[in-house]
Image 1 (tube, rainbow, N blue to C red):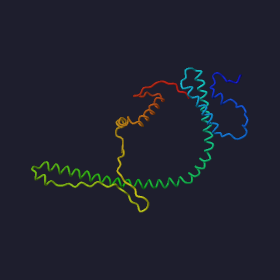
Image 2 (image 1 turned 90 degrees about the vertical axis):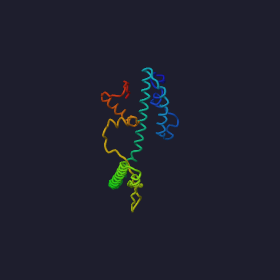
Image 3 (image 1 turned 180 degrees about the horizontal axis):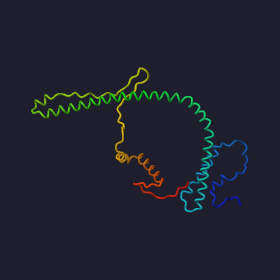
Image 4 (image 1 turned 135 degrees about the vertical axis):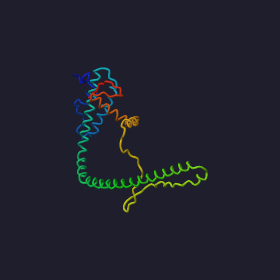
Length: 237
């Protein structure tokens, strides 16, 4: 009644949602809506630390009021952002509809050619590896033959095995455009032991984060998850 608000009001919320009193100059020019919302958000954010530690229900009620106001301001800003951005998005969609089919069709064709090139280069690489293995086996056979013979002369007369030179860094030179580089890369063909792979990768931060999310999803579904400790908390929606 005296204009000071209710005891359980958050001061920032009460000040922002109360009807503003007209002041001189209100109609002198249009107020920047973004700046207005920004000022309100900054004022509301200053009150967040007040509720860093909540010890009673009355304070919780005030904190929830401030949370509601911040969510409201966030929604207002997002609606305005969407309103201003939408015409640009629609214009972008028109451009994409016209050009993206061309981009995708050309890229798909280029990727198909790359796949064929990789198959050919892989075939060449496998032949190269076979030659290397055969050369290594021939070297081992020659050494074994020498070891089975006696005398220094026999060792000197051991057959010499030629080892294929290392393959140079490959390139596919084109008559048009740039050359493509070719290098050997080890890739996973199949997983033969998921448990072993999981154990090996279990110390990787990304794997741990994924496992944590999957475990939480299982807990949310009411399942019992091994290898974790749990606690019951209150979730505020």
